[in-house]
Length: 334
Image 1 (cartoon, rainbow, N blue to C red):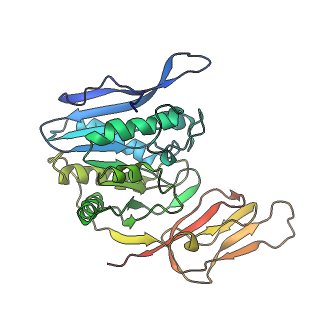
Image 2 (cartoon, one colour):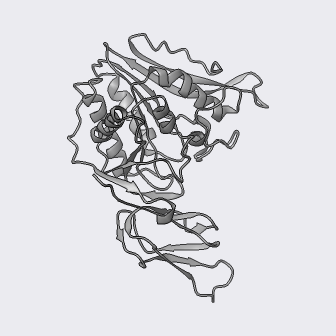
Image 3 (tube, one colour):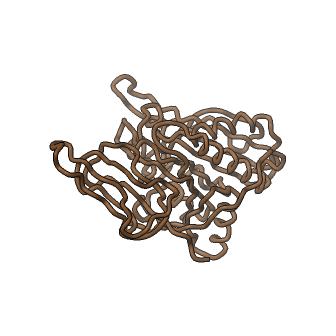
């Protein structure tokens, strides 16, 4: 079905263009209105197209800032290809500073390939999948831990359906050059509905990231995003003259999965005893849950049941039953 979202950008025109992906939305205050999702298109000579997105979750800021800084740089950079940038893809969530859209509760990174007849979140996903993916030769969707997770800086990608596609994805990971690179099937993270998984289904090399923690801006995560984006645009010949630091190398790892995760067994205050990047052993104390209602009750002790490297831990102290507290990864087999 044809997308109901539209834009005034001519993707085939040379130069820089700035407009919106206009998402129809009828509200109490605007019966025939639309949601303005910012979009920029930069086109030079013949060459590949990079589709770069952030703000898929509104409370993740490293990618949003990195893409805004990159856009200003590209306005004065020679291009031999095309760059399409959407720095606030889920604009309603971005404006609210929330993970999910306040308009329909939608998690944009769980609804791909979307639905043109659905709510705003599903319509945005459908527009990306049907109008932007066909134009893209590579996709980068920048994420961070957001309000709930303290995340080790990683890039993630799906493995690809053929050896040729797998090689293309590994090339993209190497070029981006995050400290850690994860090949993942998406288990535990919305395997089928994410933007980068949908891009892989279209045969497009794609990666996503986790670059920060909390409702703030990580200086380290921002630097990784900026450097990685520049390297990719340089290495793929889209912006061959753009300055980019050489990568220090990326370590290939894999998530251990649910067996390597710790979830809160009860409501309480989370008192962690391990940090992202730390190597932990079986039986090592992970932290404690202090009960809310009885200050005299001993806290519940949590221990790691497998060994690995802490990939993320919960950021807020107040926790509820079922909240993810820790996730682990391990070195990948080569």
